Length: 112
Length: 118
Image (cartoon, rainbow over all chains, first blue to last red; front, top):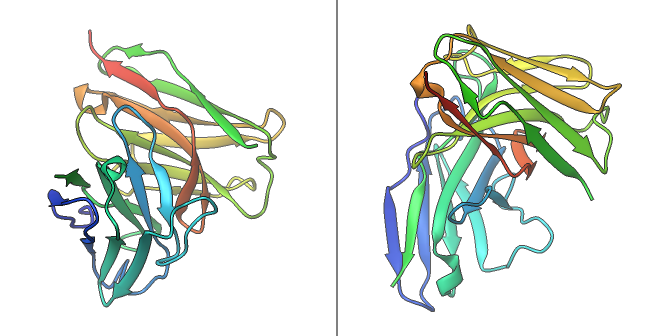
């Protein structure tokens, strides 16, 4: 039941693109298309930005995109803006031991 | 517009049982499309999914917490609840309730801080 593995931090300059990885196993990311990503600003509730690997909820910028290959999912943010600075979490359905939902450990994005 | 509002005691003593409720407004909890979930976040740490429930009463739990938690749903009151027994300091966290679609919590409450301390 370990959390999905994310880098603790990533950084980039305004206008650049960055990618955050999320590594799981064949019990979760490797098998299911139920991978989502969340953005969390300081003192705020998480906000869904990508669901089912590569779908964006209404109102979420097209600068956010998701993908998956094997046991690893990725979130790419293009055209970085200062307001993108936040914590980002991946999430996946898993059947490890029993069906449930698993989060990644989180990645702090710093816009330099 | 769907809104979720958590309510809880704020402070719980070690070894006691924590009880939380999530009131849902702007939508029916009896939907056959969504699950209803509890997620927590210890101060300064990451998110941890705890459990979810369907309107039929079907439940899912994080295996490592299953022995201490119970999630339930009350369709007549349009709310769902979580009980965590035998709490310790490690259960101190912001507790969020959320509506979940295909294993993605997609609408969240604002969260309620629960502190375990004597």
